[in-house]
Every structure is written in structure tokens, then in C-alpha cells.
Image 1 (cartoon, helix red, strand yellow):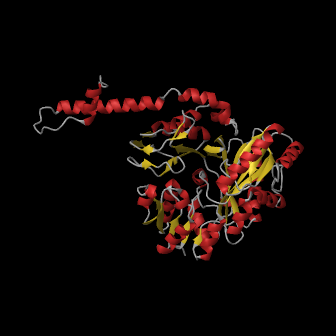
Image 2 (image 1 turned 30 degrees about the horizontal axis):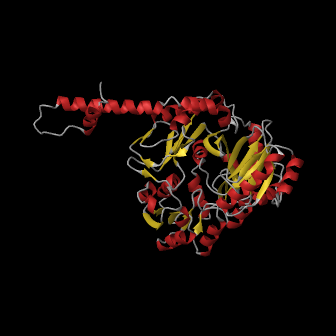
Length: 503
């Protein structure tokens, strides 16, 4: 039985895993780098262990240090979260060798599905539709050109070990092949230590739809329905929802069956995701399998009513799934927005810094998975995502209305965030009508830029500051007859010196 879990991650996912552990009475161990000494996951855990300097390669990606920390703190299991070592089969093997439970699939499954070429072959064998393309690694630019001409443009050149848009290039004609081939291989090598690339036919006007799956150690597997993940910027998801407004009941059944077949084909254990591309005619194709928990898993939890982290822990404890496919239903609608510390008016550059003010929304159907707090300094070394805002409502229309409201209430000052940008997305007619695909951001880029130029957040912040200064000045003036000789407030002093306060 698992009594103590080390979470080999940081940020919001570390806190999210710890919350489920606490509910189950399982103690937790946080690992942290020098840059994360005051991070929330460190403060929340039962125990914490410093594992190295800020650079990920010396801390969160260092297998030896994490294994050493788990043994030192007598952890029974390690939960990898997402990113970092979550899909690293070597890490899973080391855990097995050290007698530590790895909360995830077997390393053999990770090897089979982590390599995109290998995964394509397995899906073809399992009868799951795949996008037309190569089944072997490309060996040269000349071979790439020949295959592209045979398949027909446009095509997508992809890194075999890739993910998150890394090592991916869209090719429209033969003249673009050589540069795309060389840059994709270079980017893949620097990101994943492997320069293997392959080609797929580019699906035009596609929807990016993924199915959540769960498997146990006894051959059982189920899906927990789909997530629509088509709103992406540079192949990075920024808004997700479930159910998909594009998927029909008939298509949902076919895709769900295919997702379960894919899971069973590799004897999948734990929580994972089968990602599909769906064209405008609702033909679907296997894209890849993520052998870990996804960033967007909360919307599935809200609609299906299953705590996916708890299910991961139960499977790791060698328990069979305690529900069957027919027990799982979709209820209502959920939307997730990824909150990032980035400047949407400056090419989405990361915006690290100290959070001066934080006002988080709440109310019925509102969930925030985050790791920041007032006074916390967001480090420059890691992904700029600082949290996820999730809403649930009985219908999609009500969910959109709720998301608009909570994005309006969400206030973070001291650094730039994408909250205003997300707020604008909620008002684009194509999104409101559910009439969008992966081309949504490019299609509406100019409109979103124009709206962003209104600087609504800055105006609101100035108004809030001015109101607070006015309140303090009136408070001190009303108490001017007091004899305690209290000093003038710093807000009032600043306003008088700078001449910025004339209310």
C-alpha cells in the first residue's frame, strides 16, 4: 500500500496531486530547486527536499537526485505530474529497480507510445485510423521530398520523440522541404536528444480532440470522454472545453471505442490520453498518446465526476477500476483557460516577477488550480503557466457566461498576464457559436490584437489604486484630530509628491 508519495514536479500540478493525496490520507514529499524555496508546493507538502539549483537539468530533470530524495524520505511511490520526467521511461525503470512505485504506465508502454513512429505502427495493428504518412524515420532531404510529393502537399514534418509543438514544421511546397527538415531535426535534438523525424499528411481545418483513458493492472480500460483542444497558439493549447461542440453522439462513440482499443493495444495502466485529429468531414485519425496526466484533465473531472489523480493512486496500489464504461456519463459543460505570466501585447514574451496583488474569482462552478500567492516571485527558469481557471455549468452557454465573469474578476498585478487575451477569446463569435478549429487563433489574430490594445486591465488597476488612495486619504482626514501622531500613509504621500491624485 502507498503511504507516502514524492511528487517529482513543481507548480500547480504538484499542489493538485498533493490535494488528492491529503484527501486519501497519504503523506507527500515535495522536491524543489533553489528557485522554488518559497513555492506553494513546498509549503503545502508534509515534507520537502532541496534537489539542486534552478536549472531543470540540475534539479527536476535529475533522476539520481529525485530517486535519492525518495529513498531519504522513505517514499513508497513517485508521481511525475506532467512535463519534466513524466514520460521518461528510464526514470520509470529506475523507480522499478529501486523498489519505488512509479505512478504511471510501465516503461515498456512509454517506449512504445513515446516514439511517434512506433505508436503509428501499433495503432494501425489495433485498427485505429492514423493520418497517412511514413512508418519509418526519414534518412535524407531527398527522401523527404519524394515522400512529400507522393503524399501531396500540405504535409507536416514531425519529431518522432516530439511534443508541445517542438520539432514540428508545416510544409506547403517542395521548396520548403529542406529548411523544414534541417530545422526540425535540430530542434528535436536540442529538445529531446533525438533527431528522428517523419512525415504525416496535413489535415486541413482540423479539430484537436483528445480522449481521456484509464487502465488497470487487470486488463480493464475505459474512456472518460473527449476534450476539445483546438484553440492553440504555436501548437500550444490555451483554452479547452468538454464536451466538444463539434463532436456528435455517433462520432463520440466511435472515437471512444478507438481510444479504448488503443489503450488495450499497449496494456495501458493508469491515466493517459489518446489524441486525435478530426477533419471538417468528421473523419478522425490517431495523432499521439500522452502517457501521463494532461494539463487540461480538470475539465474531465468536472464533467465526469472522477478524481483522476485518486484513480492513478488506486491503480498504482494494484486496485482494479471500480467502474465500467456504462457507469461513466457526461454531465454539464466545463471550460479551462491557462493563466500564464506572459505579455500578450509583446509576442507573448514570458513576464516573470513579483505578484503585488492577487484577487482570485470564486462562486458556483469555479475551480482554480494554481501555485502562486501575493508576494510570490515567479522565477524565470520554468514554463510561464501559473495556473488554470476552470468553470463548470449545466450548459455550454452558461459555462461561457461564467468564464467571462470570472476572467473579469481575476486580478494579478506586478507582472503581465494573458487574462485580458483570454477574456477577448470568450467574446469572439466563432467561439461563442462553437464554430472553430485549430486555425482559430490565426483567423482572429488581428481582432484579438485590436481588442488587447484597449488596455482594459491597466484601466481597471488604475481605478482600483485611485479608489484605495481616496479611501486612505478620507480615513486620515477624518482622524486628523487624534493625538497619536500617526505618519501620513505611504499611498497619500506618493500621490501628493507625484501630483497624481486629484479626486
